[in-house]
Image (cartoon, rainbow, N blue to C red; front, side, top):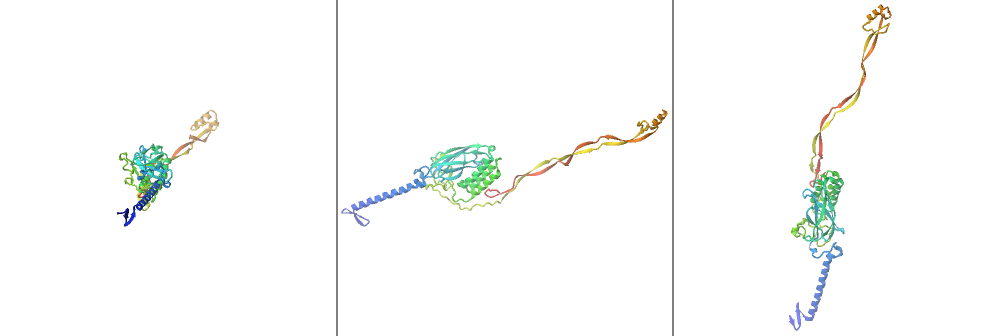
Length: 399
């Protein structure tokens, strides 16, 4: 209320000069407070302690940044092939995680900050044991509704061209990936991915099944371990027709099935949280029995023989002969006639004879080589084991 140039405020009277001075002071204080608040807010996303790889605008703060990828792999099948595993890293080492994605479609992976990321890949394995030659890519993160997908082409390697070392290396890489895996490579989902890698790798005749099983069993156990700091960035399919209104282009849209980002990201606007799973750690219980698979076959065993030398002696007989005492002639059977004729001729010397015994050979001695049969030929029925008996856990691990 005015009275003689004075103003009444809060039950007290003040001059006009006092009111104007007080108003000016209040206005200055408000300006100082406002500027300070802006400086604090600005520092939260541009300060050195949390500087992104590439500066973000204020519009970028309102949603998380994504990598948009499209892996092209001829022959890859969503139902029978393993997923592609992408390893995503930033230059500072603050972002370092693996995620499983589909091939032959555009997908987005939420990373939290704008910047350039290095993406390397673990080759998927098809149902016939074929794999791919995989490159690495530099990918720039940005808004989901503005980022153009980076195309990556995998060159297929037919199953018969894949070596044992190639397949074992993939199994080892998968085991390493689940250690830093996001939600696609942990828990039951991760164990399922590892099992699919194992099954497809072992379908290749060149695979070292023992080495592969060793790596994948270790990977399944790692995937099942409780990870309070598991990195779970949102990974989703991108559809251009949706104009960025779904598939991870906005925060909290609920389409990705993930509630946090990689723990390496420091963006305060990402809305991420490392959520600890209260489910108890899985303990393998190998109580599902799988009997051996067998079949029978006929096996022929030939006769077992050896040779020996057999000596056959000569065959002989003895003959009795009459020999003339005078002329020495053999007069066997003609003894009397020979003596008579000799006497008639005045030859008395041939009037007598004597007997001798001669050995006659009917057949000479000889040697024969003969074959002796030690055991006759026979047929055996044998049982062949196609796969040994084994036990499995409910999670798919084998023993």
